[in-house]
Image (cartoon, rainbow, N blue to C red; front, top):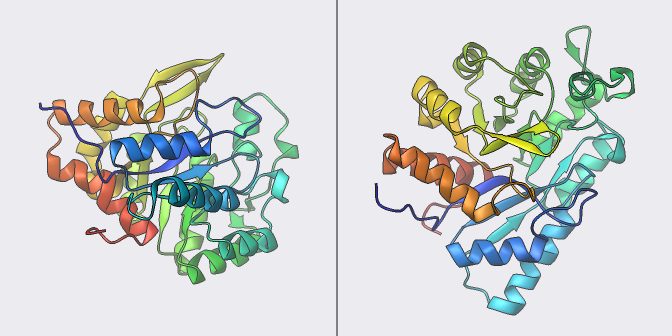
Length: 289
């Protein structure tokens, strides 16, 4: 297949500096890379809390350095780890008012994450207790709905994901993304991914590679291709979860990912849908922008 273009792409899951773990790019460097390849938008994520203020500063940097016509926007998010008080409605409301577009459930503070990493899960953030979501999460759902934001399931277990997503749908949350279900920490089977899409019409976020520990990463591309063929492109979003120094720089990883799909029978229209139409809808970006 001809070389793919990144013009107009949107990646809703990228890690940058500053971070407790060294990342390949800082916020400004990522924005420069995005502008070079013609990307439309990126959502930056941090396990250490929220990035809405960093996204605002980056957009101001882009405006001052490049003017008002780059077509690129950086968006912020919040991750409900211990550092922000876990499921903290006050923190969520503040960050959404600052313009954050994605609310992720706990990552490194998720009980499932701690358990899979061989740590004590009792120190984790409660999301589901007795097969019901905790009351504070219902408050968060209301804010996500009211601000037309996106709920990401982050590092919760497959069992918790089903409970959370049903409760979120019942609370009126329209935009739900199942975060990298292929990663071994989450570990959702293909059958369950098919079921959760069928039952709740969620978006499966399928990422470039997964951390296997010890600085080693495993490519997700063959598995991503398989799930696209099983559930269809209308419920799969292409993201990188990029920014690691062990992996190619963000734009190289994304290009490799999309090229792999194109070289293996995924049409240009399907790729457009997974890299542009889905995230544009989640972020309220018009296709013609």
